[in-house]
Amino acid sequence: MHFVQIRSYDNYIQANIQLNLLKEHGINCHLKDENTVTIDPFLSPAIGGMKLMVLNDDLSKAISLLDAATDAYLQTLPCPACGTKALERRTHVTSLNWWNRWIARLRGNAESVFTSEVICRSCGKRVTDLGFS
Image 1: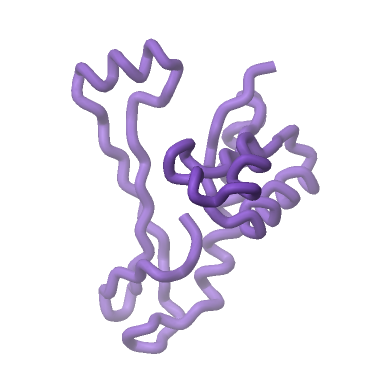
Image 2: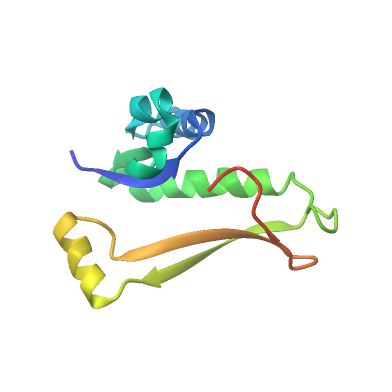
C-alpha cells in the first residue's frame, strides 16, 4: 500500500469533512499529522499542515470527488465584489527547475507545483478569503 498526499489543511474541521467525504465513497484515506496540528497549531506551517493521504490506486477518483465538492460549494457563494454567483476555481501547474525536480525525485515528491485560485467569471476579481485551499 502506497499512500500519496493530495491536500493539506490548517483547519481540523475542513480536513475531516473532506476526509469523511472520501471515506463515504469507499476511498482508503487518512490524515497525516492530524494530532500534531490539532494539539499545537503553531507547528502547522513547519510541518505542512494536516495532510490528506489516499492510496495511489484511488488518487484520480479522490481528486475528482474533492474537486466536484469544491466546485459545488463555489456555485453557492456570491462574489464579494459584484454579488453574482459566478465564482470558479482555476488551477495552475508550474514545473520545477531541474535542480528542484531532481531533489523532488529523491524525496519521492511531485515534480510540479499545483496552485489554485478562485476568480469571479462576471467581474474578474480574484477571491482569496474563502477559507479553503
